Length: 309
Image: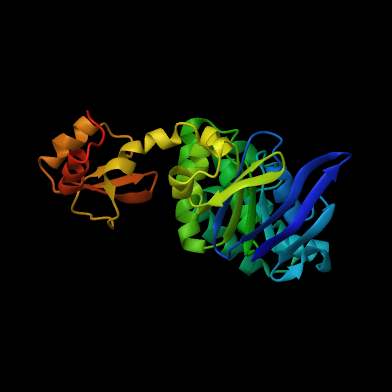
């Protein structure tokens, strides 16, 4: 879907992005993460040509991005910012309708799309389509921003730290809503964040950057089980501690709705009490299933000299 081939962005003598090569798959939730100044936002903005490349190539649908007409390419790539910047003098419906109008959609098709998407993100269209942005909370405005990016049905969505300005409760709710929405629309999403917990929760794969270079790309579990180097270990910090008991006692097993659900960081004394009543516990966090803890997996691990309570 999107391929970086030896891409660099240079400002003076500084390599903001330094010879990056990677491929983002169709339908993937791909997270760019790293410390401030690592090049993640520059990488994101080069995809839709908000920032020009210094060297290398980015391919979109197997063609260099430079071969597309700029406006048409951006219609095919939705963009959600941290500061959503809705047009204050327009209704929610008209804010969402801008790109479909530029693409000359019929009004009835626009209305249908607006209503469908508002309902999908938990903003009932009957209540919200004719409101003004000032009448909405920050979290509601951010939902409208997501809908606006989806309005023309683009195959790709870029999201630049879209939830970082929200309070923790609103942020977690929007993360959950985005995961649910992605399960329904199956877009290719490239998401920038500085929050490792958010990255682990949302990403199918994560790209950790440092000083313009890629340190590691992989599924969240790859970072926990096989970090590439000391920088990766340091950056993920206590995330490995949060699932350390799962590393020791968890087995691969599908979700069983007959069994209780526990968090990866549940204390082992609680696990033992639950295992007195149940043969298996589902290990799940933020909508993602990691595996299961069973009586046999715990007793086997302890017999090998595993962690003690």
